[in-house]
Image (cartoon, rainbow, N blue to C red):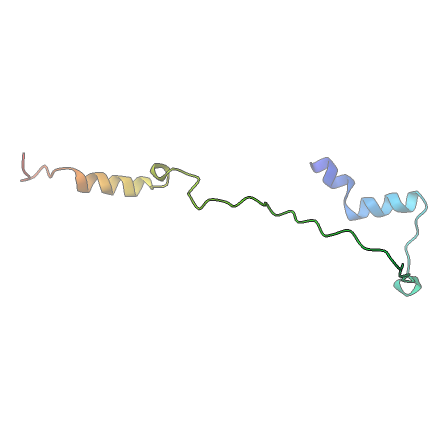
Length: 85
């Protein structure tokens, strides 16, 4: 992936284009030519068509912090001092 990123960087692409004969152009030199009957291809929708469930991906037992788990256990444990046997 890093090699692809390096090969497609703006500077590398510019250097490659110049090497094969392309030349930088002044925007004032560009002429827009409308072509009758041409219909551009429809836009590509990259969004997932599947509806995602709202259920959590991580099971609830893995979302509790160690501190919360400890407090929960301490509150659930019978008191050692004066509690019922």
